[in-house]
Amino acid sequence: MAYQPTTQMTQVTQMNIAAGTTPTSAPRPWKYGLCSCFDDLGLSIISCYLPFVTYAQNRTVIYPGASCFWNGVTYIALQHIGLCWVAGAENRGIIRARYNIEGSGCGDYMTHLCCTCCALVQETRELRG
Image 1 (cartoon, rainbow, N blue to C red):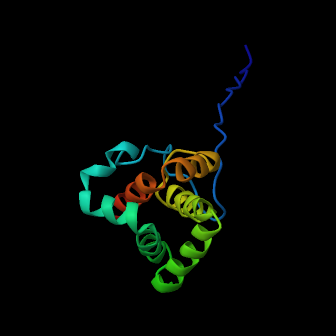
Image 2: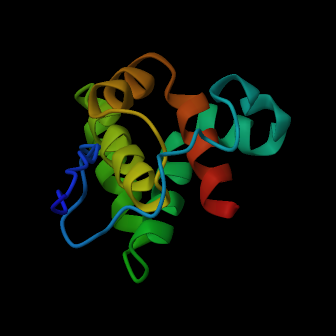
């Protein structure tokens, strides 16, 4: 009887990968829940009353060397025309990609549109570790 090789079918999982990165594992959930924003009361107060401060600080962690002042000014300008949630969602997407956190771009926009303060707190706590 002659040798007959068997063919094995492998299952391939399709993943969206940011340019220049390779997946190490499946996306994970956020370390801190969106509704646990009041666990850090000081950060929650700053994020609710001065969201541009939290946004600018997060931005300087994401982009070391970036100007905290100008990031804050940008956020204030966007806040005056009702579009600060767009900048916040952009940050959130960058954080999700960098730390391999589950979610979507649409979810980022909706989170910042509906709950900016809690989103900023969650992102800051994630960046702090």
